Length: 124
Image (cartoon, rainbow, N blue to C red; front, side, top):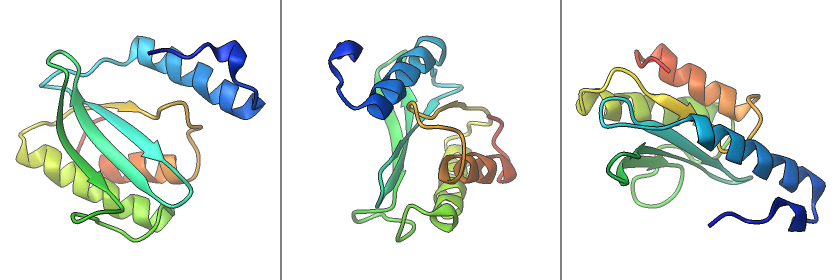
């Protein structure tokens, strides 16, 4: 499953992959405290709540597809996605979660998403 980080030619992608592996060593989700895995591209944003103990995705919220919440992966869209994630966690009776930023730097859209989840009553 793991790529050899030495074979990744793009330096910024190699750094991101190393950060992703170091984060995943420490961040583990359970059914009481799921892992919120964030996937961000230039156009879209997706957040999955994952129970690593059972290897099950509880739900996902994204900016594309049938259940899209926002149009773009900008800061305003991240706030809408964060509010939807918080509402889904509350409906599953979950008050805490762990945040997996997938190697992305904690600025801009990722920070706006995390702040929105916190503002809506979920402890990260």
